Image 1 (tube, each protein chain N blue to C red):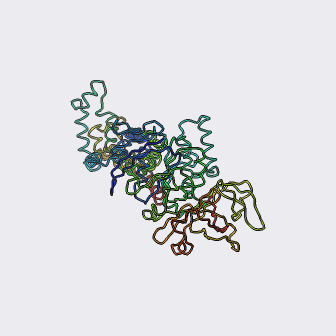
Image 2 (image 1 turned 60 degrees about the vertical axis):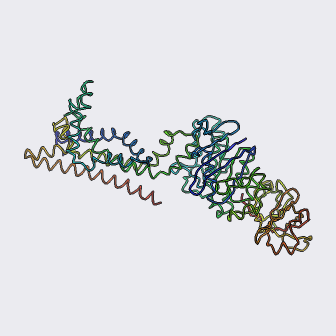
Image 3 (image 1 turned 90 degrees about the vertical axis):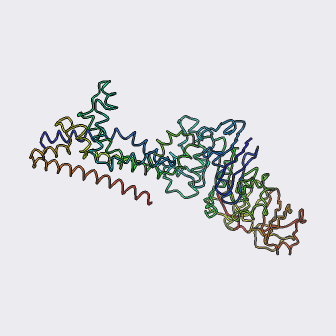
Length: 360
Length: 226
């Protein structure tokens, strides 16, 4: 359980966040400059608010009325900032070991685990300046994990929106999540938040605008008006079950949902784990069964929600346990008769193999 | 070849400069760190006080130090009570050199500390390291060129110190007479050739030191640009 009650005067507004959560992974979304980074800094103990109260699993990290404020080094809260902030005078290995005061078996095990989980073994002898943006993020995440934090604070860089997909940290976050490490994750990608988090918080101008299960909270209307950078990607994590070299395709079985056909790359061998994302813009929707279509993936789904917003409509459709997000124009929605009352209607989703972009 | 007397003067000068540089390192580092982090009111006053030896006539500094360390002076009385004599000893040369070279250590080091991103220190704290640990493992290693530059400048200044030293320590051959003082004494007593030899020696040492400082500083500039 994490309890956060933070009040911090910022330049344009006051940050006032008051919430409790049992969730293991919490995603924080909202427009840039809305106070998300400041909130993480207060929780990490790097900034002091006017009336903070932060309690983590019963332990008080800060309580202004009782004049308690644990120093950052005693909080055991790992912080991965937007720009990674690796120590430039140390190589990757020394960066990851930085928070380990001893070199006992437990520390060695944690180091090895972090290096393996983040796949940074080949980078250990390199200096931060020689790493790509995504590699730096992975090293910063490994550095935080190596200290066995009780809470992980991740501030995804805005620039990550422009980072090549293979460089994104998302697949590694899914691995961290699997270890049940509690984390607060700032992102601009609603699809990623849905894939990673059990709970989502939307912050606007310093206040909680919405809080709850990601599927309910991260709606088009709630996000688009306040965060123009928000993306709605479908994230699928799973394993490759078969490969067809003649066709140049592979069969990918997500942990949720039906198997799909993706473009094969040399390392996509049966048994390999992979994470794919499909932009909500890249999914076609039909209200009748599609028989003659070039897309290799046609899945039957049932509409669970329809959101109308200005010129766009966001459809949520459940297909064998995976909820797809599809973005279409208002005109297309009108032509297909997909109004708010369309919930429960069967539809067919068509996704080309090339629309599956691999992030790991 | 250097004569025995010249070697003795050179050796004393180098020892005095080294001791005074080492002596001011902890204080200079603390002062530089304080200046780099202190943004509140009063910072300007402290910075000016630290820089005073750069602009004051060295003889004025020497006179102030003499007032302080004379047996009737504030510190001199206390030191005399525990049997420590300063004035006209090698200690006086070290004190005069230290005071005069102090700002030359503090300035580049303070700038180097300011160039270290404070958020690096903040992240280091979240990784479980205390403030002193963070200073030793992050701030200081990232400022080492500033430290080396400051120490070289302070050492060079100590080598050439004259005005404050002659007032506080006199010019006693074999005890307090450094290169600068020896050149003055040789000229005063008409030994121009010996004075010229010592001057040439100081030129050589100063050139080597300034060359090294320049090398360190240019590498630092290149690193910052990259």
